[in-house]
Image 1 (cartoon, rainbow, N blue to C red):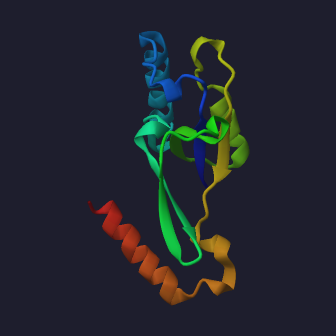
Image 2 (cartoon, helix red, strand yellow):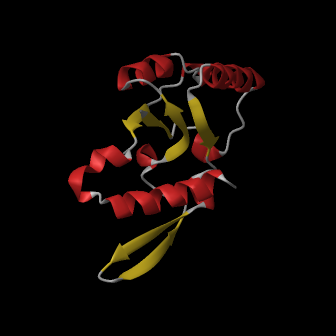
Length: 140
């Protein structure tokens, strides 16, 4: 099963504060453990919301809202994509994640949809097209 681990805004991320060398080394070590265990598929930190935008879709049109965004507690600061045997295994890995300066933080973990999760509505034709797209992405 694949899970997305979503790091939430922690008070420092919106200020573009550079992590301490100690925290960066702890995170590098953690990521190295994930790689060695075959868990880590992808992962990145995100710039503050002031460098981003949101696109809103409503009434058949779109509008763009430039950052920064005011609802800081809802902001995503970074993510990992992990391959684990179960949600419980993902949670156990996540409990080992280093955190800077004992700051309060919240990290969300959610299962990624797989093709089998869509049931009979997911036709063989749709599955074939999606597999072709996935192969193209992996072939880059």
